[in-house]
Length: 58
Image 1 (cartoon, rainbow, N blue to C red):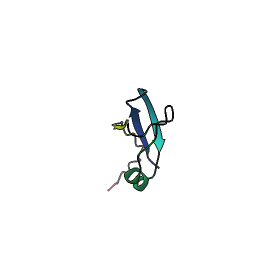
Image 2 (image 1 turned 45 degrees about the vertical axis):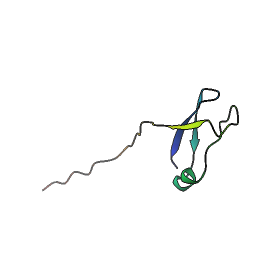
Image 3 (image 1 turned 180 degrees about the vertical axis):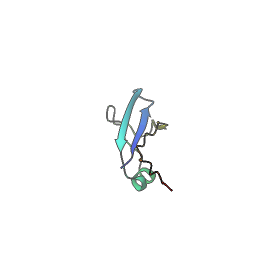
Image 4 (image 1 turned 90 degrees about the vertical axis):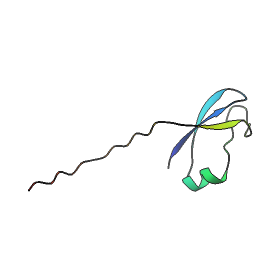
């Protein structure tokens, strides 16, 4: 499941939340510190992916 990053403008605290993609579209997260949902904004975060390359030999 994806990890989303948020920032609470009320208490100025960043926090992360693990949610399904569908769940992310349907609900607004609540700040774990001040329990406020109206002042939460989504933050952009870097994505890290590990892949393997398959080399073809002719």
